[in-house]
Amino acid sequence: MPILHVRNVPEDIYAALKARAQEEGRSLSAQVIVMLSQALQHPPRPQSEVLAALDARRHRFSPRKAGAPSTTELLRQDRSR
Image (spheres, rainbow, N blue to C red):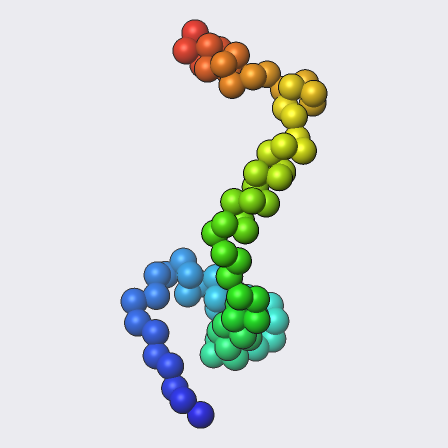
């Protein structure tokens, strides 16, 4: 089986990985393999698909109907502080 070495892992990422491994009852190496496997099971969505989904959500949600102030109103409030 191939061996993979990863260098210069930021301390916060290493600590989070180690904590997750402990929570799951796995070694650090086993946890990394599980997480890599999970990440690779779902191919990345094309950018055009992501943008289309965001656009569809934008059209379904109307902040004004929900009672939220407009961006112009928010800017005016912020500038008047």
